[in-house]
Image 1 (cartoon, rainbow, N blue to C red):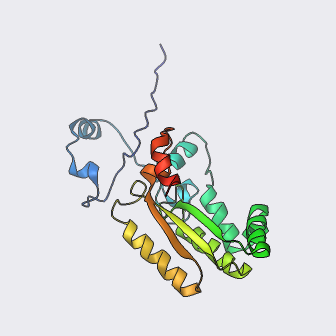
Image 2 (image 1 turned 90 degrees about the horizontal axis):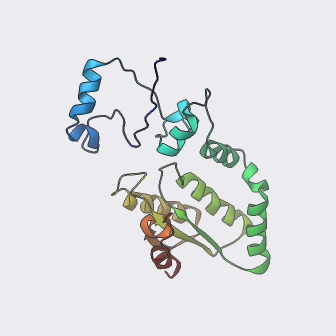
Amino acid sequence: MAKKALLMILDGWGIGDKSKGDVIYQTPTPYMDYLNDNYPHSQLLACGENVGLPDGQMGNSEVGHLNIGAGRIVYQDLVKINRACADNSILQNPEIKSAYGYAKENGKGIHIMGLTSTGGVHSSLDHLFKLLDIAKEYGVKDTFVHCFMDGRDTDPKSGKGFIADLQKHIDTIGNGHIASIIGRFYAMDRDKRWDRIKVAYDQ
């Protein structure tokens, strides 16, 4: 009988820095310790350019799943959008041109909503800043940012700093307003719980 192997993926499990936020290090893990002590093992780099993310960007489960078994580096949307922002090709995006062009021609405002964090899974503060910069370039003064706070892909207490960074950028360019703040538990529910989404929708 041929030997068989099992590929088992443990989301959120990794080799940390033994800091206060390293939950795995802080928690007893006798079975995993036994496996490490008695069987051959190795380590994989699952962040940054190793998995198609920007250098220094932490990995996440979505990125890991895309790269496992691919046999190559799978470049993430985060990298593609970063490049589009850097070379200004984002200005040629038809949706960007349509939305900002309509707002400028009709004296309307722009509403930007989404996760406000540096998690790199569903958001990037740099992308948000670029959208605000574009609004200023178009002359759209009423730009409203509806912030969905993270606490899942980033430290649960890091939101205050992200809001401060956003406000600083708004003050620097002289354009934009923080219109609302709500948690992703409500605004980004993916289990079809309308009672949660409704809280964000009615805000």
